[in-house]
Image (cartoon, rainbow, N blue to C red; front, side, top):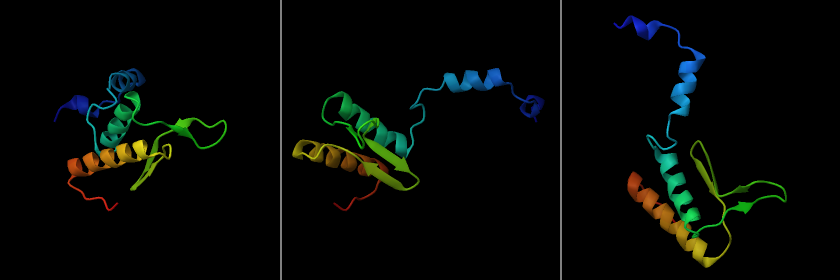
Length: 98
């Protein structure tokens, strides 16, 4: 065994590793969905909404096995959300009941 594996790590080492991580370095299922949503937002196909007067704008929330999606109620954004969900499901080998 490599003895250095058992040495304590410093705060500087942890900071270095964390700050050098790219947010999507190894995307999992949650990051894949978020990436699709962020791309659509940047390209103007989706809009975030504020759920309260002074609340920050949100597009989606992921928690354990639940996904909440927030967008303007219009046909264009509905189609885009459906398209994103279809791409996401296909990438994971899942089927979504609409």
